Length: 122
Image (cartoon, rainbow, N blue to C red):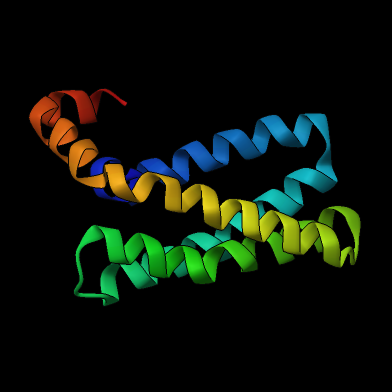
């Protein structure tokens, strides 16, 4: 939704801002977070633009690849090789992503109804 409604540059702007805040708190977590985000967001972007399916399928497929990669990169950089944490994070992220799938039509309709004024506000 962020890419679709706010555009790539605003997503990157928010990511940079959050990375700066995290960097102040813990540099290792900040590096892990930014690295994981860059990789998982690239996967999401690729799937979103390559797949010619509806948004539901794009979310399902992109999360299938980006969630495990995000978890792998983040945990290894932040905490080292902890397979249980990598697996647990990947599963929770993927299942959390699936929770939104049934609501995509309603969310999309609400965003479309609010129009550009709302989207450009952020």
